[in-house]
Image 1 (tube, rainbow, N blue to C red):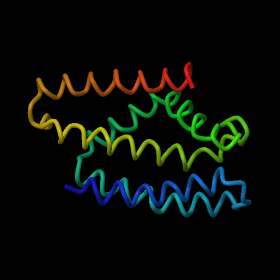
Image 2 (image 1 turned 180 degrees about the vertical axis):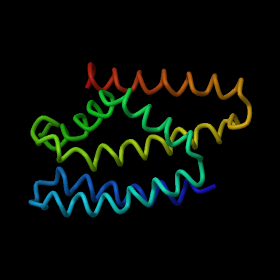
Image 3 (image 1 turned 180 degrees about the horizontal axis):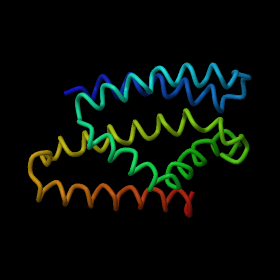
Length: 146
């Protein structure tokens, strides 16, 4: 199980990337991309090795479909600091969005393993549906209620 290591490690790097992008300090975009890019490349390499090419491809497909959800959740987080996603140019969001994609991918993989559905197609289909419905409910709640 690599989840504990990755979740703690990625939380640290993701938090630093988030602070560089949104923390109100003037961090050069090139440095932010280099800092995040090296870590993100390493995570992608590990993900491909541990989870396989198809799962990593699914991660990016999921991210493309869920970009609105990512936008809403980061906007929600920024609202606690009196800011919004629209307060920043689009290129500032690249690193935090990629970290978010990688982190939610890891959460989904952990959910699959915790439920014992990795090698059980029927159970996995149910778990995938629960994950999608749960994600949509979180996004809708954040967007409309909070």
